[in-house]
Length: 443
Image 1 (cartoon, one colour):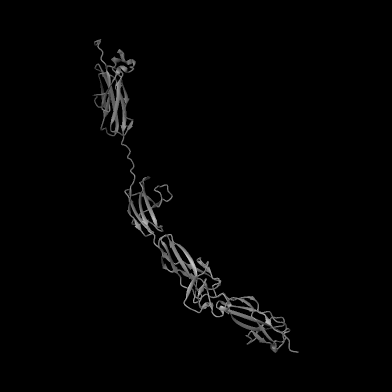
Image 2: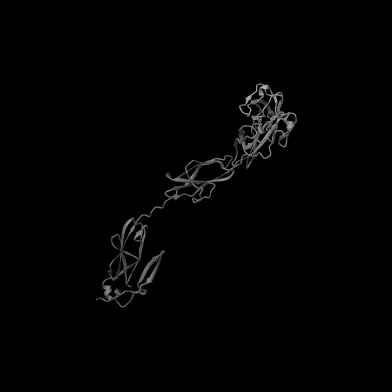
């Protein structure tokens, strides 16, 4: 065997990291038993310390390797089973194509190469990152407007994107104000003030960044376009209903009502006095501030003396004033007056009584006061009736239509009663007295 001179050369592991050459003395490594003379006869062994992942998305691969022999002269590398070429202990391959690749390396010492060490891996294209859609607002109201409605157009760079929209809510798809929408989307009944419209596009379960538009609605004072109206029968005891009419202006609009009494007399605290007729004037009815109003009758002249001079239906009407109010101000609108308010029909509260001698005798004069009645402005009608001895089977006595009646011979042996009919502009009612005692002939 040929022996080399006793001179000993220091061998180094050469590493290039970050562009810098690093020499590691191999004597510092704990060498396996293969470093013996017997090991040399089989060539040096190589160990791969660093390599790419089994599945890589990079077109570049770096291998780090070293030998168990301190006297390695060089390394031979092969890529994809091509011829071995001299290489350094940190070998980088670039521009690799997708697919399977194979790397082999062996060390050379004293002209002999050791066994090759191999590593296989695959390069695959990196998965494409999903790109979020974008959204743009293509149409919108002016930044300052008086309209309480708004319409928005919008689109996305993804043709199949869906949209969710919100008005005046936080820019978060977790907010309950978000709803699915399509372009254009319209909104009505918006209140004066600042508003925000926000839209988000969703494609392939990926959400775009929200797009927002801000605008302001200026308040507009309410304006009446159709006067309030009154429905119902204008009569004491009946209920009238008022509609508010038709209004425009900034929402929300609140409505209030005030019923008024109108008369050609002088109004004092909502009641007409006995002043001579004059121009129609109207005054508030205290407490009558609801859309519905039941006519109380207290508005009519307050004393019987006044009633004897004026019929209420000649001057007494009602109307309603509606006031619409919003943040910009308020406006009043007045309905037309009702027709003259009719009194309630008369109501009998005490039957008519017959005043006559006891016992009643042919030739006596019977009279009646007509009974007691509730109501106003009465017209009275009387009808005397002849009844049998038991007060039944009564029949009208022809011509007996005065509040007095003179008993006739034909009345003898029977009884007498009277019916009283009271009428006013609101209607009429009839009440009948109890029958008299048995009528007798004069002695």
